[in-house]
Length: 231
Ligand SMILES: *Cc1c(COP(=O)(O)O)cnc(C)c1O
Image (tube, rainbow, N blue to C red; front, side, top):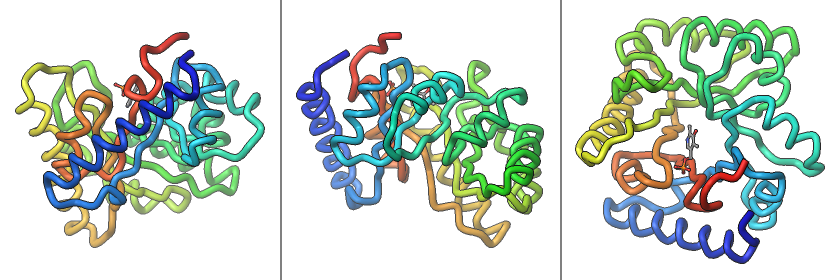
């Protein structure tokens, strides 16, 4: 695990990257939230995040996050960013403030059912595979348009926006296109359903500049803050 000083230097560098990416396209740095991704790192990583006054962390596996949560005493917002299986929905709803990786109608309905039974309004994002990457989870664009109304109408789900992951590619055009498609989809869904979907979670360590140019409101940063993953 890197030291806190190293982490602070990395955080500083990422903040500067965000500022310059924003100023390139006339956005304010305050419009983009950095979500530190602590997956595959020990609980110290979460402590670092808290010490630097960040309020949320991203984790991609339910059980790993729950174990860390148990050994981390103070308050923190937990965001699930990895694929969620049906048999983990109960544990996820009980433990995550927001689930960014809602990638099917089936899983949305299951989350609704569990949230209802727990008397919780579950905040979610819909993950969309705008890069049409066979290696990625997520709704296809046409599909999300079809099921949006049904998900948005669920009593115990609060749909706050959209999320995606760009395909692994050396071609920056592919990355840029993937992000612009998500931003376009956001506007279309807002108009069609007369609703607000303010959160656009897109961009990671390697493509945050492109994501910010396309309108990202949340970048999820792992290696850029913590270095290579350890566990
Ligand atoms: C791991 C992960 C990230 C962080 O990726 P880095 O390249 O390490 O910044 C972001 N989003 C998701 C969904 C992830 O699984």
